[in-house]
Image 1 (cartoon, rainbow, N blue to C red):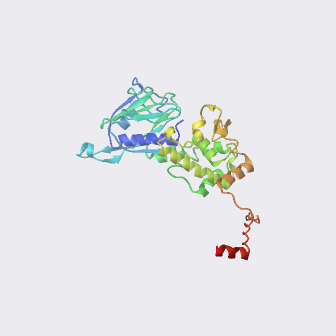
Image 2: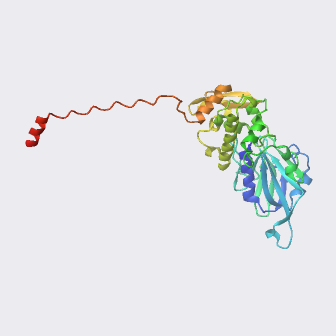
Image 3: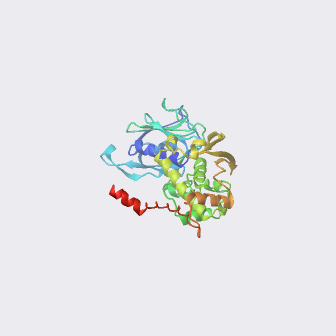
Length: 343
């Protein structure tokens, strides 16, 4: 499933190629029909009307959702005119399991588990194809059809589903106190709590596994049993994992080599950095973890603390004994010195 980094790459793709361009054509499916399962709560006519003649002012994202802010160009300057007012409707995209954006001639979003075929246009499994006056053509594809494309009127951020989401780890990571408070009273396993989009929007299965591995926290530990230090490490690693994967434009080949990510797919037995990987189910989701490093309870806290901090010298411990001094060589007898001098 596309998670925060993959959806951010889709947003960046739209912004890089379509920003400031005006929609000239809106088509549906490969055969032109309208997929009512994907386009929830709207009609083909309403959706086309909301986009036609509108200019892409910005591409926004919160968690796993992305939306377009559209505007209307006015005045005598035509294509050079800036949108003077925003429209009252925005398309909001949720990518489900296999949703993806692609631009004709420029490629598509990258996923670990599948690849969008852009050798033909529109791509196979295209559900929406939008053309702009700049000559750019963009397609939304979704083979498994679990994604949703909605038309939201008014301020997208104050309307469901965006208004129901929690903080975005890339855009607005809360401070340590707020982060700890968000999880400290949760009875659910920490893996399940991390997947709750009402707390942290955009964290999905692979991000949660990676964060817990890097923080050395067992995924089944109830969130409320974690120490403050453990929760703060989770916060730190959540920020690191999200930032690094976004900087790599969600290209898995560019992720750090020592990440669990590269070895967690397909429930295939293996190891990471010399430690065995196991697979369990937590909160209904397949979970990869490393038992040798992610331990339950107090033992896990102590182990992760020990790894995070350099070893300290124990109080009262005796300093290592200095090596015995070397024995000085005896000077030769006086008579011998005098003979040597005379010679």
